[in-house]
Image (cartoon, rainbow, N blue to C red):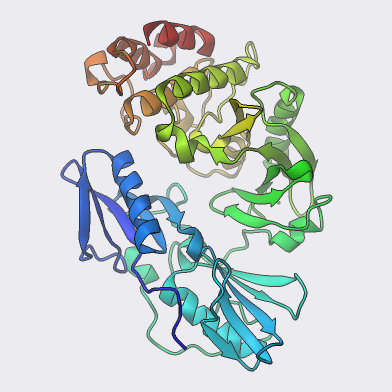
Length: 451
């Protein structure tokens, strides 16, 4: 039976001599076909996403260095491969959730799940779900990139560790989706430790949730997406079970959550729906159709300025607090649209940073202030983060790895934004917290006047 899903290599984005290359990924060996070169990582990512969707590549691996992965992006067509009972053919079908054509039909669930694992590796599906009978209960197995946690900060990833296995696998029993120690070469040292709560576990804890899927299961805090009442969407933020019982984790989560909860009625703060502690600490909150990480550099210039205003508004609500709001990164901002109005709301509120700090994980990412890498927060940490967001939105460049750029080091802003913003952005990105503007409000005011 011929599958309707074409076999394409994942794409990867790598930096070579100050250029960003979009090429085929071949088990980590940099021998894949090169498709394009770009001056910036953002333009390379946009091109790679277009190619991924047009040519049906399964995913994109974005490398931040030759040994560290900064991001994974999946084609929706390769999001989920399912194993279901099909009475029409009196067997078990393996079907892409986004398609209709069975890739194989097997007489038993165990045989179908075993074959589905091979197809998941061959075609690079993000998730494999084996349903039980005609019900909605299922077991889930992640793509090897996710199981090896290759985007987690501090993981120096060995590309050869995810090479395709050529030796036959033996069926796993009693759970056909369990992985065995010999199934694939080991990745980072923590491969195989308990981490992700299954959607079924969370559905049992979260009221009125009947459908849920993984959004981000890397690191110490995980995200899930689910429909919510009134036709809206929600995300659930939860501590990884891997770290849930460690000292200080519950308090770290709760302290950041309570600050968020205090302000969640404000227009630029994500509305909290529900929260709980089982299977680990979690919070469900309202989201829009897009995150700033997904569409930030596609927005009109004035909308980008408005978004920065929303972010400044959300950050200043904790003005005077001894602990500044420190979760000002693109993935935590959701764009809410209603009655022709668009606004950005912030979620997370430093939960992820606090939990990582509690368990001793390294912090990473271009939008963090230098003191955050040292495990510290200052009164102007959020000023630096807002400056990094302004740098990204107005210059369409990844924020600089080294703080304290001079105004001349700040790239020319995009068309429609004045070059007069450069000294204000440079001041916000000062490595010394005392050299930054006193508050996010003061920084945004000077930036808006310069634009």
